[in-house]
Amino acid sequence: MNKTIVIYGSSTGTCESIAEKIAQKLGCEALNVQELTADVISENQNLILGTSTWGAGELQDDWYDGVSTLKSANLNGKTIALFGCGDAESYGDTFVGGMGELYDAVKDSGARIVGSVDTSDYTFDDSTAVVGGKFVGLPLDDVNEDNKTDSRIDAWVAQISPNL
Image 1 (cartoon, helix red, strand yellow):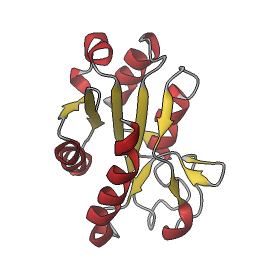
Image 2 (cartoon, helix red, strand yellow):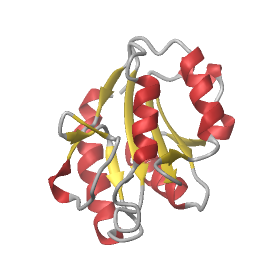
Image 3 (cartoon, helix red, strand yellow):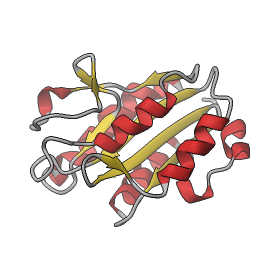
Image 4 (spheres, helix red, strand yellow):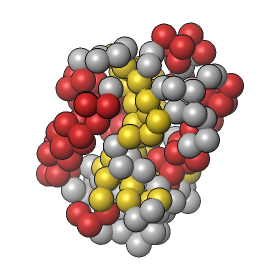
């Protein structure tokens, strides 16, 4: 496996704890997006990017500078997987919209994006993170479906691992 890093933005600690679980399963480091630099991007072949969703489907605040760093870096040939935290019950019309914003930031970068997830196991109204009938990454609703979080992470890590 090539060098991999999990980069997350978290306001309440939920996305951080999920990033740490994913990093542990992949045997790599989890890094707060506040510490993201061009060097971190260039040193890692695989970037696992995660964000919580706020407001009307927006990125976690720390990601706005992180997206600028991503966009200014050379992502061509890298592999990217995305995960997002959201609340499908209270914010069903913008569920994991932050993950959709991360996808929009990297989709034309020359990177290979892996880890799409079928929508059938989720109850939500709308999401910008759904492209072609699938989520662009792993959506997690640790507020209402915390009993599914670990099994969803396990299945997703097994899915993306061969691509890393």
